[in-house]
Structure formats: structure tokens, C-alpha cells
Image (tube, rainbow, N blue to C red; front, side):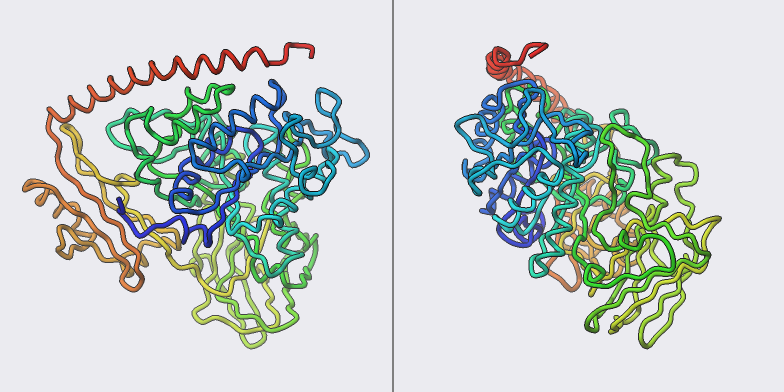
Length: 567
């Protein structure tokens, strides 16, 4: 049942999606609805597991759980790949002079005796347990499958998740450098903050969009667990129709999560059924990657290395910005990009150190460290003050009135607050991103079909787009309709109030120049309907209790294969 122009195929940018996660169950925590939706549209979905999951259990237990999940999600066994690295990794994996060994003394990748690890299967021999090997194997598995989009676990509170995030960033950055013709999309997401440890809001009256459980992360303000990722920068996508099923045990997300019996996945399925899925896009490929970079001071290699964040100690909560940020020492920091041939540049993105303030304190979060920037090219010089650019929680976007065609570009920071504390990345783009889909919001929730139950007010209607979301641009680019009648967004709430008194409403929004649209139905519910919904929830809970017995029995069976203390 189509309610918008969104398609996974268009979003992925092709027919192959690769999901890279540390553990067997993180794929559902992080992207269960996306995996299911992509498969429903006929895309190939490859799931890559970095560890063999044998910290608590034999690998075969976690592997069997995974194959059970794959059957529920419609993924063939050959598209499940195990890299065979250790579960529950420690900091000494970063030590190049030390061969890392897991708790059983293994120092190389392996499967479970039946299923081989990726390197053994494809290259004939395993890889050693080193950080360099991990990066190389991730590189190899991407090259072997050439996915159009990669979704990987981002940096959160778990050591293995942190290692996965760092290694994927390194591998993809290396890949883009060495294979310039291959430009996959890279998205990062959380298995914990928005999945495993998120809030269980399944039995609400409405399908509630994904939220961060701030009690489960070491942060303040708008942080997400990774100090360089801000909640307001998230990419939100709708979930497939089947995954909006409010009968818990019939929902594909529940079935996929519950398949991980050894992890008691049946307990968490309801946490993952939300109105949207959230990701953060990393534009690893941009024109800055092709340039020779020179700077006035400091280490300029950080500016275009494709690495927004790095940490050498997996247990350390203290962020050392010097490991991933350009931190100049002169009074007017300057960076120059020189190309081998002339390039067209439409806009620039600066990732400032302001995001790190969110990790430490939210009191000065909106303080803009950079106040003025001078940009020079072959034939022009432009000065941009803070009022001339788009600033959002530490990210500065500078859009040229007309794209420039130049063989070099120089950026000088001419005014800043106190001391300039650095940039993690500068992106140079050929074109300004355009919207590819939109979705109607009600009180900032992704809306599908919406019933306003007694005691509820009409939700505030707004619009989400995946491009630049300035209010003026949305009002200019989109047109709203109520029951086929043109309606301004300014009058939306008033018109809805009047029309809903007469019956159901078809609310539709369309892009004025592109085939982008979204529509929902809204109507008022009755007290009887509300009571029926509450009764349905009770029945649903009862059905869950019956199904729970089956999964608990699988969990108890898995316990016999759990390693005892001291083993």
C-alpha cells in the first residue's frame, strides 16, 4: 500500500544493500525494517557480521540464530557473511606489535567448523587478529560484492560496536581513494541508542518515530552516543507497510529479532517497531578527496581523509580531537585545495568542533565558533559571515549563488569566537543535494493513516525531506492538498479542524517540480474505537505470551551451549 513516492531502490541507489554489524542480532537492532523493505522490493541484501559471536556461546549457536533470522527476512544463506573476528574485543587489538588473541587463544579468523569465515572461503586462508587485517577484510568484502549502499554500526557504548564503526570508516575511505570509479553510499546507525536500548513505545495509540534513550548513552544535550553525530542531522526513512503491523507477533521486525533466540530477541522486538528508521549519511566521496591539500599550520591530512571521528582506546570516554581534526595554530587558518583539472563546485560543508561541545556541555551548544570565512577561487573572492550560511548543530553549509569552475579553492577562517578549535572534515560538492522523498509529520512523528482518538488534539502538521530542510525552501517547493483542495500550510491547522468535523481527510503534499509526494488519511475516532484498540492491545499481549513460550524454550536450549565461567 503506497503512501509516498519513497522506494528503497531509489534510496539505495541501485539493487544491492550491504549491512555491516559486529554481532549476530545487531542487524535487526540497527536496520530491521530497512532490510525487510529492501528485500520486499527485490533488492539484494548482504549482511556482514564482523565477529563470530562466541564470547558467551559456541559460534554455531549464533550462526543458527542468524540463519533463522535470514529465513524470516527472506535473505538467502549465501548473502550471510561471517568475517570471523573475535567477539568482545579489547584495546590491544590496536597494538601493531601484538597479535591479538581471543579468550580461547585463537589469533586468526575462523567459522564454526561448518561455516567458513569470509577470508578462508574467498582467499583460501584466514586473517590474523589485527586492526589492519580487520580493515582489509572489510575492504575485501565490499569489493567482492560492490554494494550500492553500505549501512554500518556507528560508535556507541559497546567496544565491538566502536571497533566496527572505526574500521568501516577506514576501509571505505581507503576504498574510495584507491578505486575512484566506485562511489558507494555510506550510512551509519546505532544498534544500541536507537535499537537495543531504545524506549518501548509499541503499545501507544500511534506508531511513534524512533527516539534516543538518553539514559542509555554517555552524553548530554542532543548527542547520540557518538559525539560527532547530532540527532538533528539524522536521515529519517519510512518503514514498509508490513512493518507497521500492530499485531506484534505478526510483525516481520518482531519475527526477525525473535529469531535470535540465544539473545532473547523476543524481549526486544517491540522496541524496534517504530514509525521511522534513522541513519546518518557520510559523504565519503566528494571533490575534496581528489585534491592536494595544503594548510597554513597543523595537520591538513585530516581535512579530506573521510574520517569524521577516531578513537584509539575503545574504553575511553574522553575524546581526543587531535586524532581526527585539523587544529591549526595560526591566527587566520587557511586551507587550499588544488586539483589536477578544473572542477565545478556548488557548495561546501564544514564539520566544525562545535559538535564536540555537545558531548561536554549543552550550555554553549548553539555558539558558532566560526564567524566569518573568506573563499577564493581562480576568478572570484567571497566573504561569508555567519548570517550568510546555513548552520546546524556544528555543520556549516556554504552554497554559492552560481557554481564555480576552478582548479583550486582556498578557504580562510577570518573571524572566530575566542580560539579556533578545528575542523574534522571539509567537503566540496559539485551540486546541491535535492530532495528525493518526503514524509508528512504530525507532532514530528512520521504519519501514515492517523486516527485522532477522544482526548487527543489534531497533531501539528509539518513536512520532512531528506534534502536541505529550510522552512522557506519547503514552503516554496511543496504544495498541500486537503481532500483534493489546495491548502496553504499556514492555514493547515484551521482547515483540518473544520474538515475533520465532516468526516475523514485525505492529506497530500507534492513537490512542485519533481515526482515526490506523500499522502495520509486522518479521521476522528470514537470512544468505542479507543476501547477496541485497548482490547486489541490486551489480546496482542496475550498472543505474545503464548509465542514467548516457544522462544524461551529455544533460549533455554541455547543455555546448554553457553560457556561456563573460567572456560
